[in-house]
Length: 536
Image 1 (cartoon, one colour):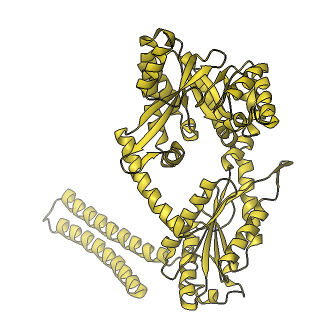
Image 2 (tube, one colour):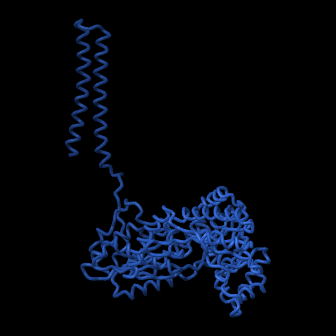
């Protein structure tokens, strides 16, 4: 083909030369025989030369294109081959070396930070591993690991420190696995492991324990030792599973582990499968509920302990489902966070609650100074729009900013310190007050307290439950109350259920309380009646 092309190019050049000569000869002949004037003959000659030059140039271009196509400078795409796929422990890998080596030109095959395969390469190897497993009845499993609280590392020490932690985790995973297994990085703080040729499910769990032990060893960053943990999900392939199904199953196992808390491990099972189906249905129903505002608000009074007079109320979200009944906030609020529904849901709560409290203030003389406490979730606090949402709710309702208390969990301050503190400062600039919920439940909040723009400490119910029964609860409550007093912070005891607790809290100089002893959460009508009765 190249020979024919070259021949055509050469002929084109000859034709262009002949065309030029013939054109000039014709112009000269016309002038000599008197058939054309000198100017006309000159024009014919120039026209012929121009046409010849154009044909010559086009022929040169056509020659350059095939030469470039076969130029030795055009790079050849190499293949990516990982040494771990040719281990002597798994000779079947040799049969699939060609098919298990995607082209390096394919995007995102290797994570640039850790050098590990990404999800594309892991999925390719998983597909080949499943094919071998089906042929030879060899077990295959996938393990997913998600580093607990990784955002806090980035916030506290910077992204460079976070990158070094990820690189250290990757190195430890590689050193822990056998030669035939594959470690990969699937996301910001998520890793995947492909495990082959293991005897039974207990071996996969043993690998999980070995991996957890390896990454749990302290990591030294800038002369500072960091200790991390990870939630783990494991799914073993069945004969019916393809790569997509297995990845979906291990994702569900990891989600179940994360719901249990830090360092948890879950193996995919029928129970998780059932909960996964239920979760999908719950997500769909929750989206619809947020869209239609199918929620209610109840309000639990906060009282002054020594007089039992109502000082404020806390807004509590309720979801009464048509078929499921009342769904606890602890069930649907984390789902709302994960689905990104919390900002819209929180905006609705703010608007409704601020408007309701302002109406009580206008209608009941004793409620003029009534305060409103609204919970703010971790997902909401991450959203810059939260500040505008609060400002709009205050403006639309006419509620005095000093009467609004925004309550955050101290767990937020543990996991998202940098973002949380910046957002709280912006909220404080609106004139609202900040409360820390469940204070004392985690030690991290204690040393961070001087940095937090906080006005109110709410003592964790777990400590209040022990007040009046044993010395331990009193001791912790006393420390929190003393801390609040030294920093001129208001203190609120949560979950009060007995008069003995009130007596002890008064002895410890606690100002405010909240719990079933005073009132359960009430509907707006119930709170209104309670406020009016307190004026008589």
